Length: 157
Length: 157
Image (cartoon, rainbow over all chains, first blue to last red; front, side, top):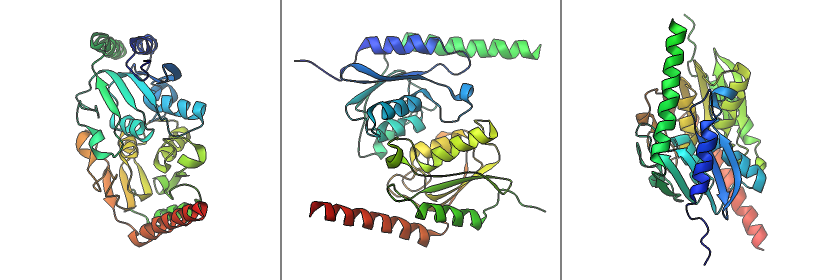
């Protein structure tokens, strides 16, 4: 029996590879898959594009909508390097994403268990699995915020 | 004393004028203003564009970002004909919209008091005022769903 829509570590690894390349935005990458194939891959571009809503998850949903010519992403899964914020979480639910796999929990703004669970307000529930490659997720964000602090210190001098 | 950022009924009226023209999407219009001038005006295009996130509020934020070349919409207000869903509500907070004025509450998905209050999860709080021109808001949605039902009945025959 072929198991579709099962967690595949290669997609999370690929998400981390792409998130690591991000320079001037909080490093987050989101990948949407269907039948174990990549439909879209996007990174956070909020600062780069100066667009409030240009989070990795939102951009990957838009790309997938265009590719499949459908606002419903039935039987699609998402892999993301950080727990989604409430905006992205509701977009994921609205898009009917079946399974969501994320790395680290965000205890401040995470809307799938980290801060609160937005699934409770929806009839459709995305299946949510968090905590994949947490060491990698933690280091990625720590390095980013360390770099930001160093940059600010240099600017102050 | 000139009062900026105070509810101006002409913007809500204009939002209803534009929402009424929508044919194949749930009729919602969102207007962003700054210093009592319109920065952006967008309508719900989810079905038309086949993009999950193309709600009026999201599109009006993107337009305002581009116009002001800034992901921060400081000192901007939003007028919308329906209480925002959680996705749009968090986008509004993230954009730092100062005052939100909406017409009818959405008791199922409204994220600013209708179903729950998302402001509680954020440090930045958008000032939220609901219930403007509720009669108009109610009729607008009722007519839309009546039309949808009639269309479905015709299709079944």
